[in-house]
Length: 341
Image 1: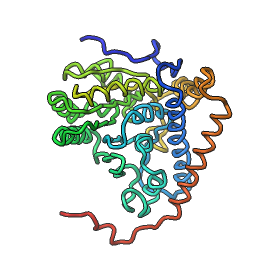
Image 2 (image 1 turned 180 degrees about the horizontal axis):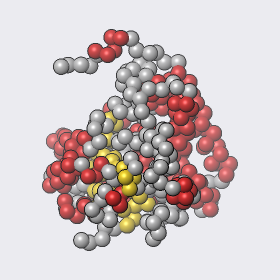
Image 3 (image 1 turned 90 degrees about the horizontal axis):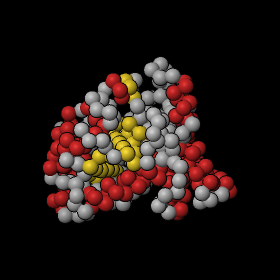
Image 4 (image 1 turned 90 degrees about the vertical axis):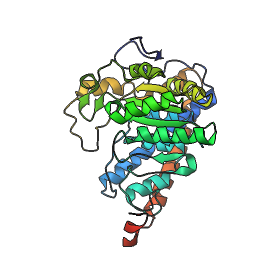
């Protein structure tokens, strides 16, 4: 088997994080910083709501994976499609779903994207910016992505579908059938695998038959690439290339972003399957620390600029939370709405 290309990866076992400015324009880099802060500060506010017992549903935090979510989704247009995964709030936020609507979903408010059905991330959708939602089961999004790609082909547009999943879900049978169909028909799909090292508590080394998920791409005749998922610039560059191929009719790409979740699999996870030293090693690569350092060292931004962006985003998040908290709880009639069988 030929080696899958590495796109700005560290030579060690832990991704090195951003190290240089590259070809991504300064304006885009500042936009990436703003996007990652929106994701992180939104989650921080949600954690407070969870601790206060005000939310419904279950939550899988994406803390630490902001560079992958924002770096990839920022390469899409507003009319491109997104199928997020169970750890996908950062992906939905990066695509442009209003922050107050997302808070509303976790609070169970009518003003949320689900109209008060709650259940947190599970059923969030916002077609206005191409967010199609996620499947009720892990791996179900693969075939939905294939269907969305086929609809694009049928309608003869130049849209793209991005489908997120973890390395654990890559073992589902739906991945293989969808990968085959999408590659056979050269559909405009970008597969984005967030390899954070664990499927709940099972390490990737105990679940994957290949060194990398992206190694499987060649079996289906598609381009595969491994990228440093802690580096938003590297992720953006790899995604730009994948999106360009898709729009040009050259078919799908499998991007495997090597990343890490700095919180547990779920809120309350005892995390007995990993060591504190391991978490600390990856925390040193936290993109919310390393990326601002890069912007300062390359003189893309001053500390005052970074502080100003953070303050603006914090105010935006707080305002969105306050709007959501003033929302309306649904009546009993909402339970039956949208049921057709």
